[in-house]
Amino acid sequence: MFLISLFNKDVTLNAVLYITEKAGGKADMHKIFKTLYFADREHLCKYGRSITGDFYRALQYGPVPSNTSDIFRAIRGDSFFAYASAPLQGYFHFVNKYIIAPDKKCDKDYLSDTDIECLDFGINICKDLSLSELTELSHGLAWQNTAYDKEMSVGDILRENGDTDEYAEYISGKLRAENAFLCGTMMPYITWQS
Image 1 (cartoon, rainbow, N blue to C red):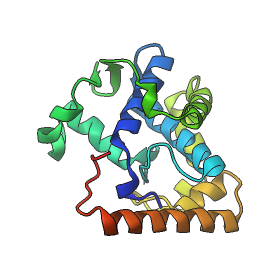
Image 2 (cartoon, rainbow, N blue to C red):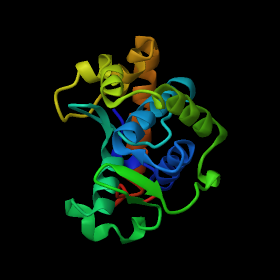
Image 3 (spheres, one colour):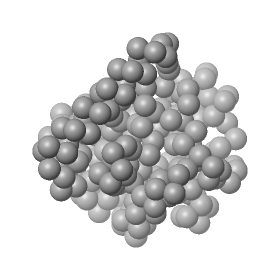
Image 4 (cartoon, rainbow, N blue to C red):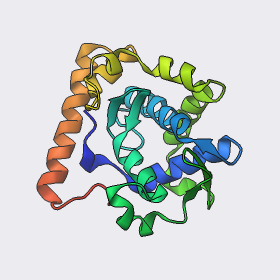
């Protein structure tokens, strides 16, 4: 599973800005969420960590990055966390209920070369697909093996991409150990801290 304490707000916000820049200056939430999913999955498979550190929930239209979705709803002003959106303002705004446009340029200092490589991978998968095509494409093994609105397992995400059970177990164990270390040494550690 992706673990909340590994979530990196600054990397995620700049990844979102990178995606919107590559999309020509605006993008819809569904395409952003699926781009992040395929980019995180690829990075996890190739480099043993996700880009964002977010975890994905299995929802009707496919995997949704949970913390990133909370940020979007806070900026849009329609969540419990709307009161906490002040530090998030200035990154992007909503053109309508589902489409965002950036308010600043992506700061690539927050993104590694491998992050950009895998973001480009996700962008290339998603850029020309419709909502229904993206939904169908993202309804793979990990989504199918997860109950509605529950966290998708890292092991299933890795297996969905063709990795072995041994590698999936190794990476899952590594992430659990990192989470235990962070939770044990940095409590309290909230999701929106970098």
